[in-house]
Image (cartoon, rainbow, N blue to C red):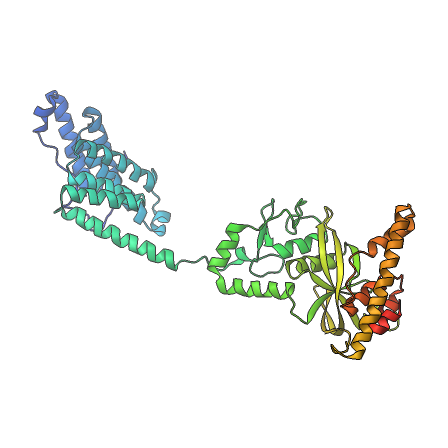
Length: 474
């Protein structure tokens, strides 16, 4: 054995953490041959002297040789347990600088503590009424940071010997350790670092998704990137994921939400601002003129509009549709809000949409946001005569007459369709869901949708605020 010493502050011990002397009276009890018993006595004396001189490895070596000669002896096991615990404690308390300049080879502190626990449990089985056996086991458990088990062991020991000063002191020390751990747990928070940032927007991760290749991004950022290609933005691994099938990383999201609540709230507010623009703000899909009550199917393939559709679907499912005015070369001054009634993400990243026109609006101003256009609008509707006036009655009469004629036309169209006149089938489908004439404005726009009008003509209808004039186009 190497002659290695372990320096401790306050080494002199008079309690249970000191070794016991091996008494000659044990010889009569165990009926050992005298020469063998003498060897045990000699080894125990050498071991105890080495322990008190802090040559703990030499002490353990002596106790182990004595144990081989006299297995299961509680004094030998108790002393070896104390020595193992002492080395474990020394190694745990050793500073980093000491380890650098004077490295110690051999077993780690955890292994020494486990060996101490093993010997202590053997002593407890032999000396079940000994307070020291409970102390030894609890001390090893504390070194292993198994504090709850250590607490139960010390309480059990105090039931055996309520006046044991060593057990009382150890229990007080353990309670101090536990209180400190609880306080640190409450105060500890993960340090804000780049590990919690999205590498695309460089902000705190919001609704994080961890890809199969191990990288984490904001959900919106990842799929915005995938609008331009199906590869991981970091390592370029091909990703077979979609917004429909890919869920957020719940554990990572909970850590972020719990430990960075203020910054998380800011990110949530920022996200909601993009998905719920407000009562007078709408995203614009620049394509064609759509009228209220008009139904339309769309294939969305441009990356900027894919992003817009995802945000719209997370919000109120509504967007504006507007055309480029041929007279000015810029977007028209009037648009129609449409509601997405069906949205089907396709495997290649496109969206298949079915939309229906809802409200008209006048565009006050517009600007670009993440590649698509957003507008501040003023909602408009027809100037309708007040209830009970002659003008209102006349308007209702005109609407009823138009409705009657339309119903007659629909019946004729259905009969033609049954006769397999295919050219009329589309018109029949378009004529479904007719609003009642009691809502002249909605009925007038539903009716003009049956006509094959040019975009410029539909744009003029959007600008009108007189229901009679709209009905006049039919």
